[in-house]
Image (cartoon, rainbow, N blue to C red):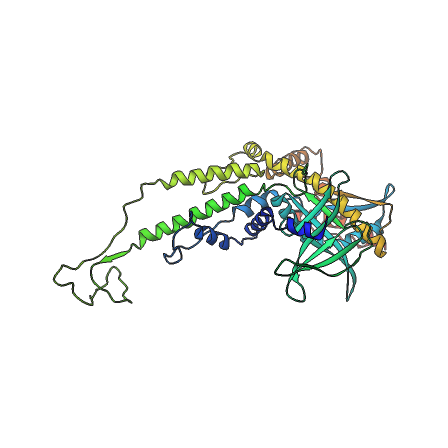
Length: 447
């Protein structure tokens, strides 16, 4: 695919929609609310002059953070050669990917919201030596030519966070052999301003799909649209309701005489008119519109019901403005079971992402000499997803087993923390029993 074809596809309505969705996730909502208020028809006429203040609540973030939990705990990664763990290669790999510990939680949320996200890896030279930098790409800033038969990216182009030397937009184009820097001026004219062969033999990108892989194309349809529209509707409801409350509390003042421009009228104010009205009786009064006949509770219940339906589509249980909650562990499981199933499905796709990421890092290592064996492979162990009620049930079972002496407290500690040492176990037991902590120095050092 050519540079221009990639660039043209990055101007689509779906790209704009994806960028807007990320804004909602990142709490950049006020500009979008203001755009809704300005909309004609559908907004509020002269809302700024009338004192309307935009209000929002971040439903998007609530839904996504409660369901994007794959990297809440860092998985254990072990590099194998043959059937044995290669400790040196494991250490090298974990060092090269250490930065991902801070990137993957937010990357996982973007993949959850937009259904697909990419990690692009590239080696850079710094003052302290070489390292691998990771860029997060989504439909909001990237276009991809994807081969469904091979599962490989043929080419991709993404917009740089910075600008060119002349202040124009800067894009980076990648294929299996090279990376090309492209400048686009204000008229849309393309110009190649840099580039080089990277030598990896593949595009160093790993793809994280959410809960399914598109059967055609690469980027999914705007599945996030229902979530963003819900958030918009709730934001407008809060904004309009807040303005209505203000209108009731501070109604407009009506009079048939001229008042000073700087007059402030309150409950105990004394009002002096500038002039009479040629014999007519003056009046000065606040006029509040009749009490609203609309039952706001009905609308609040409707929004809560809509929010619950949308949240269920995203695998979470979400209640807005109060409401019942689970009153038993069993009921909680029933309410949250889709959350657990969603997390299991997402973990399977995350495992595929991890395997692809390893092949990317291995290709970079082959080209740069980082020391990861070419015949190595990786095993990634994610923590089994569970709900809070599951943890409570497991603790109740463990207590019964300990009480019946089927399992010792030491065995329970080792099950919860396989890396716990004999010294730490002895320290815990001493703290519980109030005894002096024994000296394990000789046992641990062999002296």
